[in-house]
Each structure stands twice: as structure tokens, then as C-alpha cells.
Length: 255
Ligand code: ADP
Ligand code: MG
Image (tube, rainbow, N blue to C red; front, side, top):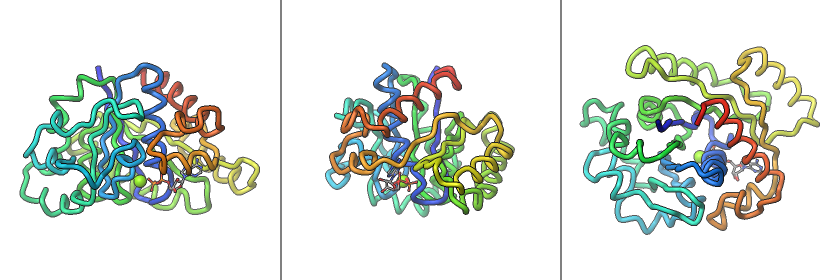
């Protein structure tokens, strides 16, 4: 059975896209069939997977609107090692265009029905807001992976996200789970990090993932080559951390 995991946090710059691309690569390198759905109009997950977002004839928007089947839009066997349902700036129109599609929160779920079962894992990279695209991701998903940075404001805004998750559970997706809280750009030498760590452990308990992703320059450089860090710099700390994360997710979710 395939599992659909949404990477969500309405805060920008916390490592959602980086984690989506590199977790996809980590899982693919462990022989999992992976589809990465880029649900952000910025199209960074597409570019980071080696896809030219400006050269797309069709994108995830056409799939959401039901105009084109996902199969016809998915880029297969990208150099990154997994399949991608790509996005670009066209997706900015989704918020308005989805208004006329009922049920508008289930457009992604319905669009993935035909293809999800051909993958072991579907990862969804969400935009940095709690908009209709994110609601579509949470409606389609089995679980949510929440990347965050251990900074003073890390917990701020999380309650809005957890509220949204709760609302989705109570309405359209009762079995939605939190798959884990992922600490990114992690530097345990900072005393602030240790403080935030403690708060996170107290608040989330077991949901706090053991794997942390260190701040690592190779992770930041990799997207400019259209490659995951696991390929761009295999032996870097960032690459190793994402491989360990892939194993932890496989264990946790029985992928
Ligand atoms: P989001 O998708 O949540 O907005 P990104 O994944 O785009 O966040 O990351 C924001 C920025 O931080 C990007 O420039 C990215 O290259 C950088 N970054 C993310 N993770 C790391 C890391 N572990 N080490 C160094 N830089 C990182
Ligand atoms: Mg992003």
C-alpha cells in the first residue's frame, strides 16, 4: 500500500522543499518507488529535482483542475532518481480556479487516485501558507511531516498548523496523522537549540523525529545543480542525515 506524506509548515524557509527533495532521493536510493508532488507555485521542488519549470507544457495545476491526468504530467525517472509532478508560477491561479471545483479541498486527492498505488511513497511539498493548496495536500495525505528550525519562533505558528490539521481530521480526513516533527538546519552547539529541543520534546513527545538535519553548505548548493544532496555530495553530512531520515521514516511508517 502506498502512503502519502505532506511536508507542511506555513512558515517559509524552514526546509520543507529541501527535505521533500532529499527525503524523496533517500527513499528512492533504498529502492522505494517515489513520487514527489510539487504543490508550491515557486516550483523549487521541481527545479531541485532537475526539472526546468519554465519549459513545462502542463503542470500540477492542470491535474488539480481535472483537465489532464496525472500520468500525462508526471516526469518519470528524473536524474534525481524519483518521479515528479511538477509545478510553476501557473499554480498561483489555483486558489481562485479551485473555487469553482467541488469538492475543492479534494482535487488533489481525486487526481492522485489513479497513480498513487503505483508508488510506495508520495511526498507533497506544500507552499508556505495554510491556503487551499495546503488544505488539498492535507486532504490527500495519510500523514504530515513538519519540518522546523530550532529557533526562538519555531513553535509560534505551529498551533495554527495543528489547528488546521485537527479541522481537516474532523471534516474530510479522519485518519490524518502527524508522521513526525523534523528539526532542520540543526546546530546543537547553540544553547537556544537545546532550549527549543526541550520544548519540542515536552510538547510533541514521540512525534519528534530522532534524526536531525544539520546546517550544511552542500545541502544549500545542491539545488543549483538540479540534484538532491545525496547525489551532489554523497558523503556530506547533509546527505548522510537525509539517508538516516529515510530509514527512520521507513521504520516509523512501515513504508
Ligand atoms: P521552505 O521550502 O520551507 O521554504 P527551503 O527548503 O526552501 O525552505 O529552505 C530555505 C533555504 O534554506 C534554502 O535556501 C535552502 O537551500 C536552505 N537550507 C535548507 N536546509 C538547509 C540545510 N540543512 N543546510 C543549509 N541550508 C539549508
Ligand atoms: Mg518550499
